[in-house]
Image (cartoon, rainbow, N blue to C red; front, side, top):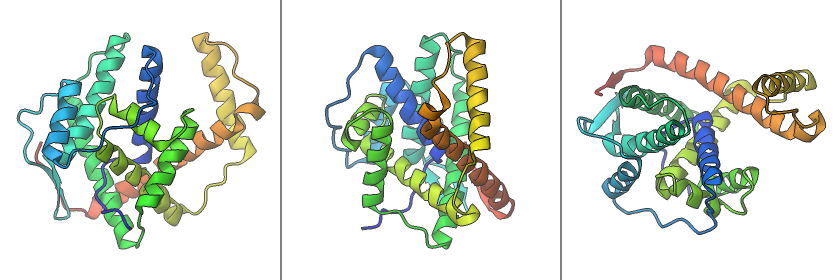
Length: 255
């Protein structure tokens, strides 16, 4: 079965969401072992639940927040994404970070939605598809990377941050789609040891500057460095592709 192509965000954004959610749970001493509640059959209900948990003000947000080459990006799609991002920003503010700029965050959310819709349209034109099995496999991988036992456990952790299961699965679909599109655009990614050691040196420098202590030996963190380099490469290639696609796109933003 192939999942309907309606995307929301890029891999880099999703990765930031999942990690932030898990770090917040850790800091609060939360669990996350219970299975996530089933997604509501009503997108309005899902959006309302996410908005309430994040304290998001959606007054003035139109039913159609943007149009991309004739495809509508709706308020129902915007709401859970914006609400989850606002929840993260509010959690960071409580930990000493700056107060979130809600208007700027709304604009960034719409921009992200437009960009990923452009990528989704391009992937569709190239015949790139993502199945439900692909989504399940990626959820399992993300869970293992974050020390969890299953995709259900990861979904439960994300749900506690205000994002319903359906929206989380949509974001994972986008993640996989963007990875495949980038591979089709730029070929397989194979970082060199020189590139990985440069990342390692940068991490060591940052650790020293922040006083957080020494980083583990290179060999112990090589896999993490590969993933970091891969994420950066995906973001770079996807960003360049979006820039190119925007030149010829018909985009209207209503927010």
